[in-house]
Picture (tube, rainbow over the protein chains, first blue to last red):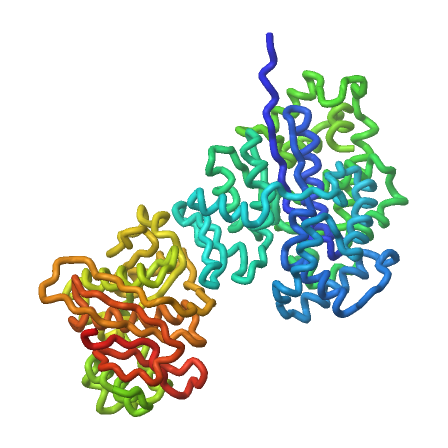
Length: 378
Length: 234
């Protein structure tokens, strides 16, 4: 009997702008993606695409870098914390003012070639520490991962397929045009040539999507209108595209954006420090996943609760103590039939594994299989 | 005919008198402010969807559209000062959902209306206002012929367009009013030819004019400016 060929899945979560500390909302997205990646990778060939190179070119990142150099000069960022850089970012957003395309051009050109401003590099290095602490797969935060398509190639491809409208010749913008599906026209490049994050996503994902059987887009639910557009465009040539919107994590009932600051003692760094001495690493990994995936769920009804996180950490400890023996001698990339069967139960009608269903299933069990925990959750 | 502030004011006043005779006795139409206050009058509108823009093609298709407007829909549109909303969009993506009243032969633009505002709301929600922020720039004179069977001997006129400090989007607005009102007035008909001529400003134009488009000055918003002129037979 020959096994059916493994399906190819492209996992493309929205990236976080490296200009601020990670917050519980970001952490939720990272943990959901990680569980989906590691679980699905036991069943299919998964490409986890997370290219900061592609998204540095948005105005909010390039504008921040230009602002720093214009207002701070040549300063040493290597000793700064994420919070320090974040405070500067909040100031940049508060002072407003739209930088011209001419002012951003040197930054755009260097970013295309792989350059990263030291302030963002500092933030990304701190995030690498958090990734290690959290037991997250590291998708190349500091790697140069240029999108395959240049801006002009992407625009030409959209126009050619009837999905783009380029009016730069008369001083207008470039639009993503999915109006034939009843979705509103959406600007993706300003008249003077500045791309937004949707343009960056298209440069990155348009060439990648057709090489996969299934594309999964994970994103902040507030971006839903844009991701509906992205789904339509990527699915236009027949690729199966799933959207997985995730609600933010309210703090004291309020949903805030990190660009406004006010993260105070709710950064990922603070949370990790607060549990470092009370729980061992495996319990931290599992407990955080239980809380951010199974307890908070995909919506955004439940506010952040430190006490519930601690209950999940305690629960994780008990689960680990009861765990049945694992099978670590299997070759990498292969799963034992038991694990594959268990994971496949949480796929519904798609190839990727649903992190919510999988993680929630741990809560109803006395003794989860050790292999499932080590391969997916620890 | 020489352009003077008095002439521009009299053109603006005549337009008001012709479309709203009941108002002309009470309203001072000699200033841009007064014109602006009058502009939103009436709820009849035409929505134009612009995909690709080329002035000669657009001029010809605008005239074809205006010629196709049924008689019973002309009066309400005229009373709304031929109000037209220009939107960015690809007509080929919209034709399945919207029954356009006219589509350019090359698919570059499409027209819906004249219709009550409410009838165009869905299309307007889907698209964005046309933002041609660049100046059109000068061009060599080019002649377009309005297709169709001529009910009268064809006429050849010049269409002068002011280009200095005027964006493509604003040119569209100004020339559109001049063209469609000239068609509805019978000045432009099938078989006619129009030679499009760019000048920085219409100042100093001495040829006899059949129609003149006047609006707030692009530099001095409290004064009037001539944006486009249709000559008597060339």
